[in-house]
Image (cartoon, rainbow, N blue to C red; front, side, top):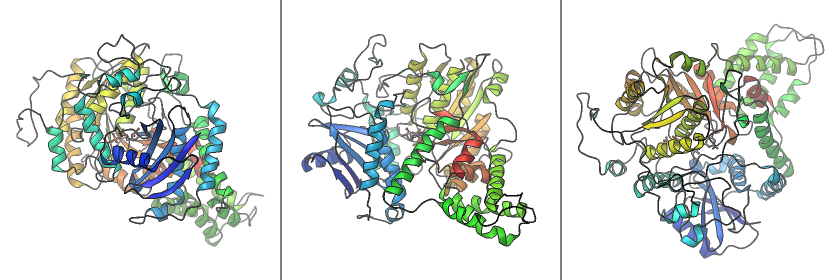
Length: 619
Ligand SMILES: Nc1nc2c(ncn2[C@@H]2O[C@H](COP(=O)(O)OP(=O)(O)OP(=O)(O)O)[C@@H](O)[C@H]2O)c(=O)[nH]1
């Protein structure tokens, strides 16, 4: 089915490839030139596609390592698991060879990767029939990655089953191909987004943070003359008519919307509240399967087993009725510490957790027939559960209900660049819409080019997705680029109050947590917008940086104001290595409110401490 799979560096070196049917070298070169050098396609989503001469190229990237993963197959075929293959291969390859890959300018990898890859193909082919489509959060730009008219028309088998509309007349169905060919992809917003995405993929720019002045100029180009307030920020008054989601400006991209089965991500209570599912069983399945595959692949190539194997060995010796000494615990606790590190828990958190355990356990007696292993596991289990369970219950819907009718409830989303702020903000909005709330999304990222358009697309998708449901309503508050985000946020709240919105969701610009200039503006933001909740998005795969990210954001809002919760995004990409959330909670004592589990609007869950602990303790 697949013609070939290539793993290349962003500088064009092929690190590994698998060829089933040779793909002409010139075709590959054309793909690389068009997509990565001349930037002729949309690359804003995770796994993008490009078609040429009857072949489809689908790819994804590992931005931090400068890698591109490309699957090539006949355009006539519809391979439903291709995205999954790309994601799994990226996860496996980057994990297995991370040491080699993290060396600068890696051009050669010692990687017996074939068995892993073959195993993935086999597994995915087997599960093919069981994969059900759901609603995908679309890239915020032109949906056309393809270049030529004949290539853009999807084959019959690929055409989405769901509806899609011509922007100019929402009542008239139009095929995605027609949408592309009529050039509804507005030039300005989409082009900007493409540029931003291109820069990131090439590893040139980490999105907004420290943008070059040229890029800023591009973002600000065409703006009218601005007035500056006494505080040095722009003050453009309140007299401007807001342009709510002008479809011509943002690339006009429409999602191929498929209705979301609400049972897939939550339940409606007797009093009509829509409650999110927790990550319980379902997450277990997702993560368990990923982990199982990982383990199978390791077995297949003889790669050594898990860290808990080592712990197990150390633990098994002592059984029952023993008063524990520090010496008894040293070895097993070291094993536990290593295990937590392998699950992506930051060293600081792993060490502290084990130290606390040691203090608690020295001098206690193991129960009859209970090994030190069981004793330590039970103690760690309890410690983690306690840590992950919020001290005060966090019921967002309840809090919103308390302010409803009096004032809008304000939630702002912060975090470093590219972690999934806008995506998860949109997912939260979708959740609030299920609860029939009126939501105003404030486009507070006035810095990264394309950010406003990205939100517009999300808003339009959400409007369309909920149009035929008994749901709430959503609109956008935007004031373009270059303006002070704190003022925009404050004005959005005022606007929401006078227009009966129940909730304001404020997007903010991504910023490095150690960029003191950008971080310092958060204090003013918190003061002016005065959010009820400030939520920080952290990536599940961020690793050791998570602790300083969490601490720096927590400290950025000025005296007496802290973060209120975390959203841990991309949980679907880490298997059972869910340690990041433990590190973030451990460093700050701030609870996790939501988990992002994919790239669909319904991929939002609440955290269930038991499940996380189970995943962490799993060998
Ligand atoms: N697999 C997966 N991908 C996600 C998840 N959440 C977000 N993403 C992807 O992460 C990428 C970045 O998401 P954005 O929402 O644009 O991130 P952002 O933080 O707003 O980005 P900046 O505005 O550049 O700082 C997109 O490709 C999203 O589809 C998730 O839970 N799982």
